[in-house]
Image 1 (cartoon, helix red, strand yellow):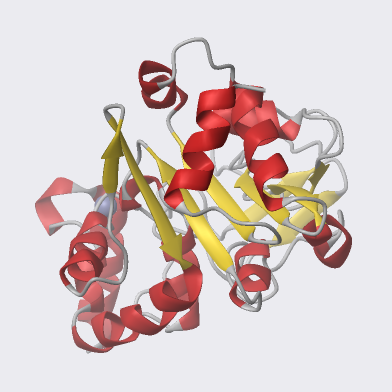
Image 2: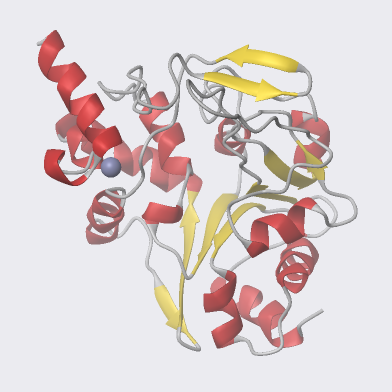
Length: 268
Ligand SMILES: [Zn+2]
C-alpha cells in the first residue's frame, strides 16, 4: 500500500465504515503521490473504510445498441471500463463485484457488493435502484473526487433522475442511439433513461461550494473533494427547483444538450 496516500485519506476525513464512491484522474493522483499505482488508491480506500465499509466506482462501458455501424456488446466478466485507469484497476481488483448494466455498470467492494448484487441493471442506469441510489440510503456516504470536478462526477445524473429534471426523459443521443437500448451478451435491455452530457455539471459544483455544502482542498497539488452525499442531495434541491436547465450546455456548444433543449421547447 502507498503509505502517504493512506495517511492522506485519514487527513481528509475518510473514516471507518464509510461508504465511498471514488472518481478520479490517475494522472492527477500520480503527480501528487509519485510511485502510486492505480490499485494502491483502492487498497488505501478499502483499508480506510475497513471490513464494514463500502467502496464503489464507475465501470462504465456505454454499450448502447447503435443505429448504424457495429455496437460493442457488454460482457460483465470481460468488458474493460472505459472511464480511466483507476476505474479499470478497481474493476479487476480481487474481491470486486461488477454490476450488470450494459451501459453504466459499477465496481463494488465491501457490504455494497452483497446488498446491490451482480445482477443490478436498472432501467434508469444511474437512477432508481442503481448503486448511486444505494449510496443515498447509507448513514455515512461520500464521494471522493481526486483531481476531477463535477464534469467527471456521474452521481449528478442520479440527481437529475431523483429531482426529475425536465429533460431527463429525453434521449440526448438520438443521432447515434434511438431508442436507448443497452446491449450485453445476455441480450438487449430497453432503457427508460439515457444519462446525457456532464460538461456543464461544474455549475452545480460551484453553486454547492458557494453554499458550503463541501469544500474542495488542494493537497500536494491535487484538487480533492470529499462530498457528503446527504448534503449533496439536500443542498441540490433548490438548484433543481430553480435552474435545472443550467446543467445543459449552451445550445451552440453541444449537440446532445441541444437535443434536450429543443425537445423542451417543443413541449412548452
Ligand atoms: Zn452538453
